[in-house]
Image (tube, rainbow, N blue to C red; front, side):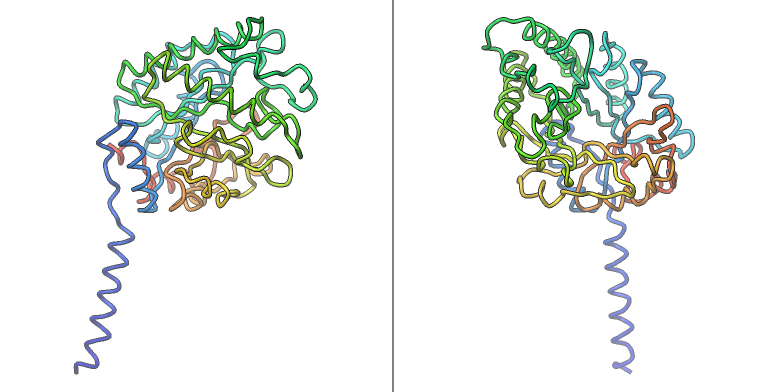
Length: 347
């Protein structure tokens, strides 16, 4: 009799353990200070839970982008993402007040906010974010933009924009927000003016690091912005771009390292390389390759980042490109998943 009972008891104990482990409750984010958020991130990675994020910045009209990418996802799934992604650049005359309004409203609902900054290129005329940094390396000198650099047209242009961004971030600080701050991303690519000057043998790593550190000092010392979580976010290296750590500005100036990636199927390439950098590792930007627009499996996205990244930030859709969560496969299954942290589950 005892021989029969023992396997049955063992079986039920094992099943009870597995069920308990699979249903680890999502902890509430009660401390949204910088320290509290970073601690929360470590906890949910250990729990194999992932915060769902959605970017809303395809046009300068944040209200329109929020409706298309954020509200529409709620309307079709019953859940808002816990993380709202916005941008302080990419377009001239950005409406900081409108951007901040949406950031503050989402924060008041219990969510988290991440901001990117597609800064204007100070080395070309007009408003321009994109610039091939290999073809135009002769006109780019990041050292000219530093606070202690001699006066120049380029320095004046950049530092005026930097000051406007700092003032907008100050408004968020005054409203009580802690911001996931992701500036100068995809620096190992060649499409933004702060990018690599050579694909195989870059020589502007120190200049990039100096620009990053200069911003860090300006924001923290001059403007008192101690509410920023600094995110270093390279592009996937693959066989085309320098390794993710090549432009790393240093541990003192970075809180999270995150990867930007647009694969055909959800993947977290270069994760081992990022892990070696000794920081919390996350996703900076994710979406489908153009061959997978509208066919990206959102449940696979979730499973890709489970146990590795505390959040993922899916990019917005644009004309002819179905990139946002709501425009791809299994959006409701993702938002309903017990390990997906949506706005209603985080607060």
